[in-house]
Image (cartoon, rainbow, N blue to C red):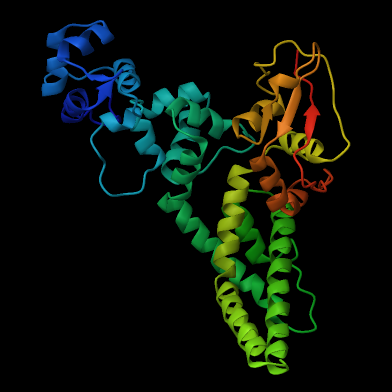
Length: 363
């Protein structure tokens, strides 16, 4: 077995063959051998641990039993799954995966050991999920759970805590400037330009200031309530808001780190923003509705589940694309953050209905 890959679990294979039905019946060793086009003795060797199947055969075994390949490896303990674990479950070495992702070994090592993504590579996580045979959300979760990522979020939260203090000061404009030490430190931790991080932090600070303003208003509402019920409601909301204010720096740190890690490229955001705008149609000739050029923004949007192709509405030379509920949700939730990230792209006004659009496919 290649160094750096997970250990195949012979007992799990034997248990699957003896207990899991395939096409309505349980497989004998001979049945499984025929399905794999190998010998019965080789199957028995796999199940006894005397022989270890190569990665392609493990993938085929997983396909036959309808399980994920990681289920054929020994559990790695009660830790949270990380990229290294997913790579091991896929039977890949770090060098193998770096080659398949078309990035340097140094860049891949930073991704696996520090949860640091190469800059300006908007499709890397999509390619990573594809190579590891896992959903994109599992890759995001693995990166988010990495100890190095958690340490960075804690450090970002400390700096934001200092910056957010001005949000509680009366009669003072709550704005962060690009030359402030805490902001520069946050930008370094997020690995983004100071100007970009300044816009994003000021957005989070404005949201924090709104909560502070609401917190003060609730004190007045409780004091001048016309009934005990109104007073209790205001007091309850105020306590809930107090907890949110206390955790606001940590929440903002997590939000910014995850948003930037999962952010659409400027091309993808411009395309999605255009698609959700009402009364807007893009049309162009296309060749094959199932294939997109690798640099086409629709590829990433479709892979993320933000848009889908409506093949039923396909015309001879027009490709119809529908924004999904996930696409609208992302646009509603992050339109202001994308406005700060890509200020030259107009933020869309969100319609309540899904809009069907025709879109070009690169030829």
